[in-house]
Amino acid sequence: MHKPKQGFTLIELMIVLAIIGILGAIALPQYQDYTVRTKVSEMLLAATSCKTAVTETVTTASQADVSALLPKACETQSSQYVSSVTADANGVITVVGNAATLRGSTSATANAISLTPLQTSSTKLVGTTDGGKSIAGWSCGPAGTHGLEVKYLPSSCKSN
Image 1 (cartoon, rainbow, N blue to C red):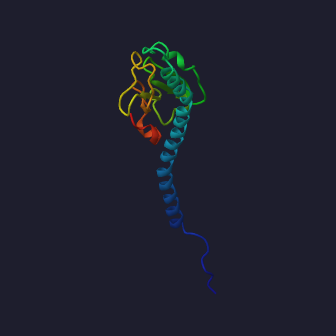
Image 2 (image 1 turned 120 degrees about the vertical axis):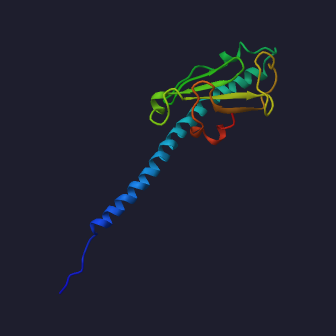
């Protein structure tokens, strides 16, 4: 009697390995981008307290010129994914990511995002004249210097 074959042929195994290799080549870069976007989300979360401090400083000011107060509004803070959070004289918050934890998918120098306070939907806050006014919203995007690539920004932060 003739016994039926059991198992897979070498060609069938090679085809399966090729399919797994192709799927891995597609999925791995997407996974790496996803992990960087997760770290960038924590960078935005770290800016939340600074946004609140800038908003309070501007809206509660008794004088129009708050440019000297705004850089002092945010305490320096850092975390596993954040090197620093600072505000300038116009209330623009710059969050610099920790290059060591973002490394691998981003350039070591492209690791900063900025949040800009807006008086209206398109008018940026001016620290020397807008004290005592309200902040209508925030514009978010890559920082002017060492800006993080747009593909790593969360969808809520691609408006700059």
